[in-house]
Image (cartoon, helix red, strand yellow):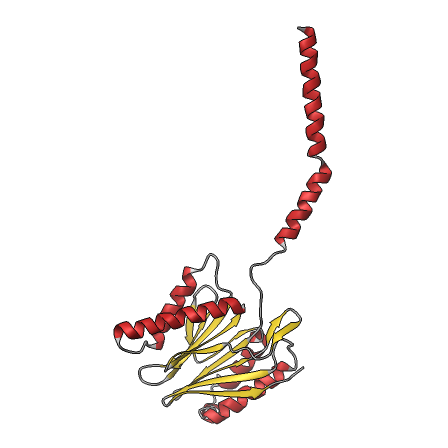
Amino acid sequence: MEIHYKNKIKLQSYWKNFFWKEISSSNFIKEEKILKKNSDFNFYQNNGGTVLGISTKNFSLIASDTRFSFGMALPTRTTTRIIKISSNIILASAGMYSDIFFLQNLIQIGIKKFKTENLEKCLISSCAFYLSYILYSKRFFPYYSFNLLAGLEKNREGSIFCFDAIGSFEKTSISCVGNGQSQIQPILDGIFQKKSLLVKKDFQTLLSVKNCIKGIFLKVAQRNISIGDGLQMFIVTKKGIFIENHFLKLD
């Protein structure tokens, strides 16, 4: 009995030493390093883009730069972030390009289906709620995109809806999303939201608004490396949607 008891104690001490060697502090450190390496992986990436929108009684305008950035690399300089959803609605997005591409295709298909089933155009307010529903349905793993929806209402007045990544939105007359938001939004508020009637009259014409937007993008592009290459403008009027392309800095 004594021999059996001694053998049992020896076995217990052996297995204790064995497990202690296997699960040592060095192994824990290695595991921590592996976990840290794995935790550095991010599902999202920011591919740049700055989108600006302005609406008045006669038209809605959305402008965006065409630079596609990936860190300090520039895979392409001719990215289009604005799409035509219907004859009176356009959508522009900034953020992760793969999410933007999928989201824009998804809403285009939904609006086309609405038109074929109801035999009428979708109103911009209805389209805004539809886009909000799509974004909110993915709130636990959201699309990394920040959107501006622009178009004409029933009375042919311009309107713009600004969205965040999980579907919250508001109707505004002036808005900006993307990398250059912190630089451009204060300029827009200072120019277009003054109480002076003279200022409001000056910026009712399409030409004056376009010239102002060009000047803003040219100035901000000199201070922000994620903005540059080209400037696209989509203008929604009673006569249809017009597209203009301009150059920014080519560095």
